[in-house]
Figure 1 (cartoon, rainbow, N blue to C red):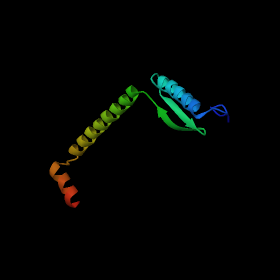
Figure 2 (cartoon, rainbow, N blue to C red; figure 1 turned 90 degrees about the vertical axis):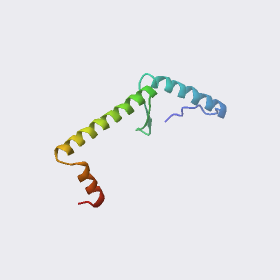
Figure 3 (cartoon, one colour; figure 1 turned 45 degrees about the vertical axis):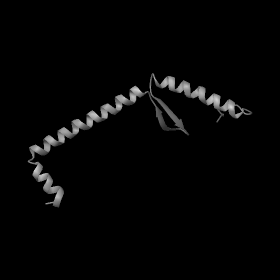
Figure 4 (cartoon, helix red, strand yellow; figure 1 turned 120 degrees about the horizontal axis):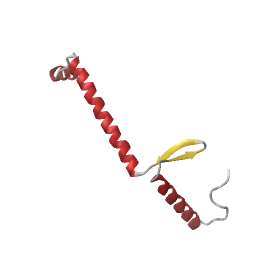
Amino acid sequence: MTSPVPSGTSQPQITKIAQNRLGAILDEAQREPIVIRRQDRDIAVVMSMADDERLTSGNVRAFLELRNEVAAQAAAAGLTDDRLASLLTDGT
């Protein structure tokens, strides 16, 4: 495996190389998510805030839809607030 930093490179030069590469990764992540790999394994994803917000809001929306579906099924099966309170209080 070749080193991404040439031998004999000083610490300030290494820092500058890392900053430049990070900047390029962040720029590319604005267009599409970037998968970071280490030792032939996917270990992280860098994505734009817009992509993160879209995923997060989608997950919340999916959870709320599932919650409403389960609540409707429970109500159709006869689960009332009183029965739920009884189940949670003493398990009977």
